[in-house]
Image (tube, rainbow, N blue to C red; front, top):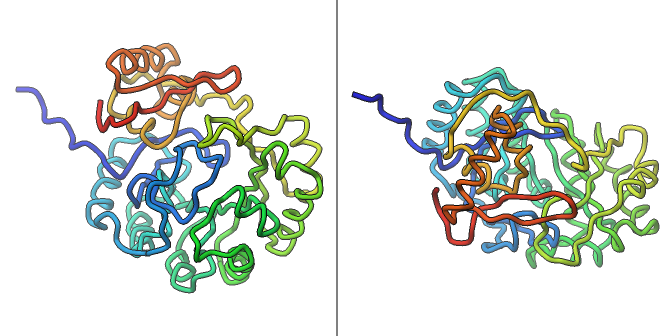
Length: 320
């Protein structure tokens, strides 16, 4: 009699390859595209549930159970990352999730957030045990904030930016601030300088400069050329690193044929065959074979961004 297959995972995905976090196991704490923002560059498409309401969107016990199950199967990790397909700080019990993960693994816990709620004292308290916080800052004034991030009506630029400053002042965890620039908008030098002024006030340990590399929510969210990013990096200080995935190499491969794991990655973000290979320790040829079969089944579709081919879940598809 064949062994029982493990239960499918709904809240945990990966490990995925990351320029910033290496080999990272993802934990998804809110339903797809539940977020205070509706960013024009989002690789997951338009926000379908725009909210600032904090609650237990997915059951704490189910999340902890899935993390434990995946940790027993996954190879060595660089991080466990609370991220996924929405804004993780919307989950009202995120602090308990972090504490539970830290009891299960020595891998550090990272929180990937858009930063919209970091000024909330309850959010600040709930993130106190995280090992690193990775928020975003995409604008330096209210007009560009509204244009790029399209925030919930209750969020103002000043409150958001001052919230980042306050969080940095009280948090024990290092902050790695991502600044994503868009061609013809935030990449214009006067606009980039405004963002840099706020970066100096926030004073993060690291600044990660990024741009669009995967298909965005809207066609007019354009990538900044690599040479322009390198020129603008000087504005943001000596701790600035360009993390845009222009040519990120895959991590060392390892044989695997887990279609469900491949599909779980694609439900959270579009990936190239190299992304899938790096995250799941597949050979690139094996990843390509699995992706081709998912495309043939109608579960996955292909999209081109520049010279690269990305794979994403087909509209309306839940599982392969």
